Image 1: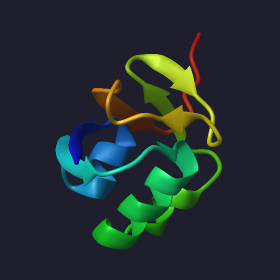
Image 2: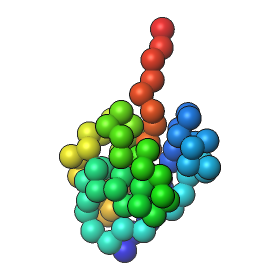
Image 3: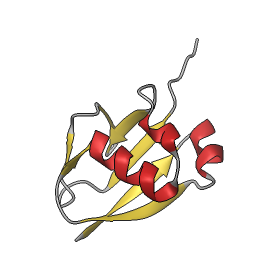
Image 4: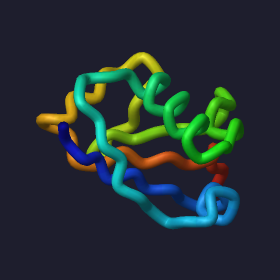
Length: 84
């Protein structure tokens, strides 16, 4: 079993009521599967919304990207951003 560091940015930080947490996983899973597990454990269905974006070790990730807990240290979630 490995621990992933899960980080929440921007408005998700306030919604989740934490900046980051450690999450134990025992096998590879997709970003979508991680979102589902976190949403269930934290009782936060907001994570399942398609607009919520993710990054794996600082690289943008899609919902079907695989997270290998033996190689990945951090997964970050953030709302869509706009800027100028």
